Image 1 (cartoon, one colour):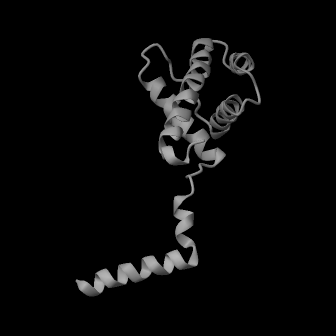
Image 2 (image 1 turned 90 degrees about the horizontal axis):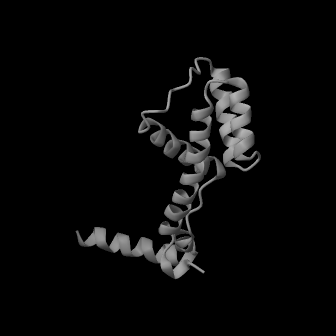
Length: 127
């Protein structure tokens, strides 16, 4: 048991001396893709809890990719909310409610994600 403790202390000192431990204290950073996927999961949860939302028939990989790319453009602010809804309704005319709901859910979850990320940063590291 004492040998185990000594090994841990020795490893800790070695990390301190080499500077490796400083990387442990850097704020965690999500990639852009991870932030988008997190937003997609939140929107999907919102959709599942909405009884008025009717699932779109996206049976082919191409249709699924089309919607994912459109959602990414909305999330990344490459297109506006109105453009997102217009492009969606142009392809699926009977799904205006669904595209509007998705656009609103992204807006709502954007602020939730920013608040969650802020909670991960220790108060001592915040500006």
